[in-house]
Image 1 (cartoon, rainbow, N blue to C red):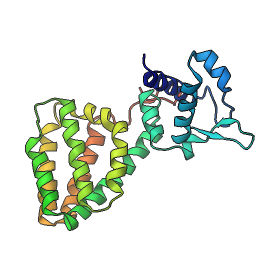
Image 2: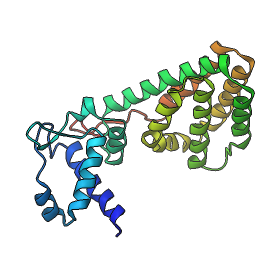
Image 3: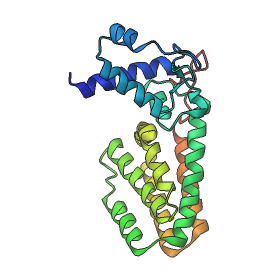
Image 4: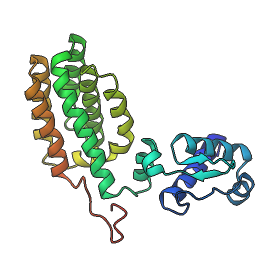
Length: 237
C-alpha cells in the first residue's frame, strides 16, 4: 500500500471514530506518538491525516496546543456529509435537511436559468438530453441527471449554486442511483427533463421552476429518500 492509500485509510479511520462518537466533541485527540504506535503508521501520515481532518472541520487546535474534536455538527464542512454517508451514519434529520437545501437551490436555479440562459447553456442542456441513455442503467442515468442539474445551475448565472451542487454530488450520488434503479421512474423523468429544458429555453421561469419542483418531489416520494431509522434512532439502514 502506497503512502497516499495509507494516509486515506488513516484519515478514514479517525473520521469514523469522530462520527460514531468514539471520540466525542470536545475530547482531546491522542498524541502523535500514541497514534503512530496504535495504528502502525509514520509520523508524516499522522500529520497529513490530522491536517485533513482539521480542514474538514472535524478537529481544531486548542489554546493549549492540543488537537481537539470540534463541534463538527455545526462547524464542519460538506465533507462531513460524505463521511456520514460513507459510514452509513446519516440520520433522518440530516438527510432531510440535505434534500431541502438542494431543493431550494435547484428550484431557484431553474427559475433564474429561464431568465439568464445563453445559447451555449441551451446547447449544453440539449446535448445532455440527447445523450441521456434511459436504458444504460442506474449509474448512467444518475450521471446525466447530475450533469443536467449542474447545467441548469450554471445557466442561472448564480456563480455559487453550481459550486454547492458539485459539492453535494459525492453525498447524493448513490441515492440518485438508487432512485433510478426503480422501474417506474424513467418515463416520468424523461418527460420532466424535456419540459424543464423547454421552459428554460422559452424563458418561462414559473414553468421551469414547477418542472424542477415536480422532479425533485417525485424523487423524494418514489423511493425511501428518508429511509427507516434503526432502533437507536441514529443510523439509516
